[in-house]
Image (cartoon, rainbow, N blue to C red; front, side, top):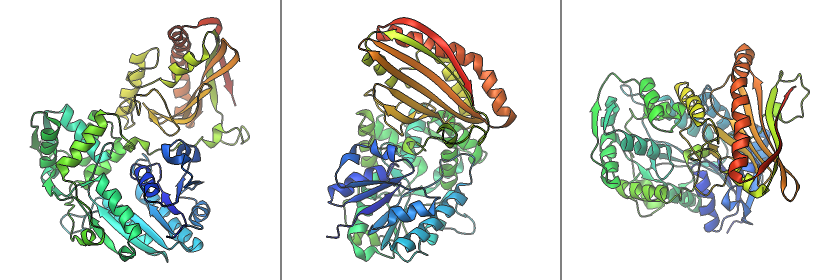
Length: 503
């Protein structure tokens, strides 16, 4: 067996995060790549001796070439749909060309790409999302590597964007107004079968150079998919009213309000639903034989994992966990414009571990220890602006956070147990923001807690936003520290005292 590592690009994404442990189980050495090595190291499989962790940015050809060097094959599992305000098609095109150059420079033998189903026909042209997925596949074939393209429709599994969209809509809406695309046919596939095909293509050289359609055993309309979900979930049958007046933009807006799926992703998915996505051939079934899971069974398994909090990866795992350059302290103060900092600090007498336990538990159902209606209002405004809002909550119920986790409208950049929690704002802002909790233990029962907000404004709107929010920060931060102290059973020895800085 070839002992050279297999590169997984998108190793912390929905599919990649599940593919890595399966490859390890099959005996492969895996090189897991991503923009943030800290995010990769936070995964449960990262400590496996057969895992190599490397930093690779899809828009940095040099880092890609370095990641590919010495590998026998690469899984290309990245996309740019979740980045609002950016042309994801252009981003994906740039990433694909960089991959071609990296594969050529590193002598990569194989590339396995997971794309999307759909045919570009005159009266029903492909959506921008599906057209971009197809273009990426064509670009990758320019590489000297042997390229295998797998084309899939909706992936059904706990935490997948397609499943979560169906789940939230069906659970929350007994009557749905839907565009006419609910009558379009699709061929969903279970995430387990997707993973089986990906690994199977790596193991079977006969799949090299082929474009293969992958789908489950069932073909049904989107309306039938909603009805099937209701049947499996044990809820009353949903009434779906198809109307020609709902545009993709309007549909994505109300979908993002009702579900935690980001508006940018919801719109890409909804625009793609007008295209019939059905396998043209079943050649993959002979090349990589496996038992295909029915759509109803895939839904049942996804619901079971969701109910028991055993979701290995989810759509919210996609997101940058890299510290912004302006916050690193490496650049001169004038390099990116003035940044602002304010916060509160207090010395507490009591058990530092209890203080940390509360800090680590923040967000989601627990709330933010003070002014939860204000936090929810900010989340609602963010949803109106196509941001994530507060709908994502916490990723799990065990009160732990790891680098890369989505936490309400924040992303965890650092989690040093007992010492530091650093969050990056993913809400819609006229600038970039960080929120940090830091604990400094001085002796056994004395700990300083510091809560700090840092902000890099963009233009006049950013400056106005910072000063408009300043009174709310004063109100929230001071009371949050006091309530954390009370709930931890500690005594405030001094403070909270305000700290602020401009750089």
